[in-house]
Length: 436
Ligand SMILES: Nc1ncnc2c1ncn2[C@@H]1O[C@H](COP(=O)(O)OP(=O)(O)OP(=O)(O)O)[C@@H](O)[C@H]1O
Image (cartoon, rainbow, N blue to C red):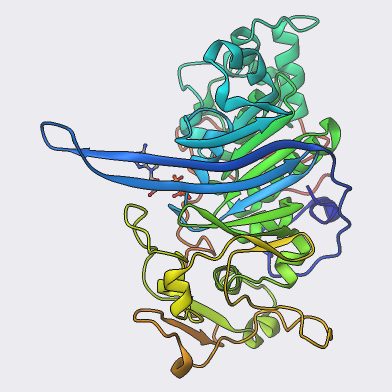
């Protein structure tokens, strides 16, 4: 995770439009190497269960994750982010491609061969409510990885679980409590404690904060950040929300309809997005500063994301792209390194260095005027200066559910304060209270 995310230790993840000074850590060796990854789900119908089509959920991904870095995977709902994360975890069988972890191709391993490796990669799920068994105590839930892997920690499982609870900012006395007794943020901490039990190398976090109230999101983001520093974790963080990814990632990959369309170092991507889809997503991120909000262009993508059962040919974004021309409908642009460590799959990228080497064009350069809009039928995008208009992309996450409030949970005092992040009162996600 970035130094920038750590600054002030109280990140407001909603303030993603704000630039920030950040120094990147030096990347380590490649821990995860994904090549040609595909997942096609057959769709069957009728009594005979005949094949009615194929959902091309993930359709040819290549990316690396280096030791100790955080790769953010971002894109609209349905673009294949979760499917990718689940394949990296080997919870889903890829249709094609390879996933190397520490140099070993996981896709070639049998279940038995995979089992001992599983301790090295763990997952944090979006919905802490449904990912924790309501009938099990916190002790049983967090201790499960020890039992599954037949690992006996020094001092016993109970002691190890209590240490893990403390590590994530919960009280060791919560050992015998049940998930419903906790707030959404605390349940996510339980999920994080479980993921960390076996000291994994890689943590895949699928929308780890999107079900939480904004004030709690910042605490969980900070916790993940601290844990990464303490244990040298490598993260793949999946989010539909560019603001979360901005605060958590060293590099960001943008997905559209099963493919990565852009991947770059975080600062480079945010200061100089090149794929029109990334530019549009970024223009929809809420900006807290009214002056900046007024002055920026907002790009509203018209129409829905096409069906992954029948994706557009060549460049999949051409049906919604204001820059699309004939070549975009006939030739798929390769994901190519257009500037240093910045790969883009586009025939007409934005923000490219000018020919005289004068540097890069301005961020969020205004799209072509409406009469120059594409070539293509249906290629519709408008630029507008009002930030108040509703986004038609889901990038700002406005439609995301907020944390569930467990009204049935008894009121109690917050758990012992974490040295890393303030805690929340059970039963309700509340803003952090300043330490006395
Ligand atoms: N088991 C399945 N069978 C058929 N289609 C599936 C299955 N799982 C996912 N899909 C489809 O694959 C596509 C990608 O889904 P995925 O959940 O990976 O997207 P996502 O980007 O994570 O979206 P979200 O943020 O909404 O979870 C979607 O069209 C989804 O409906």
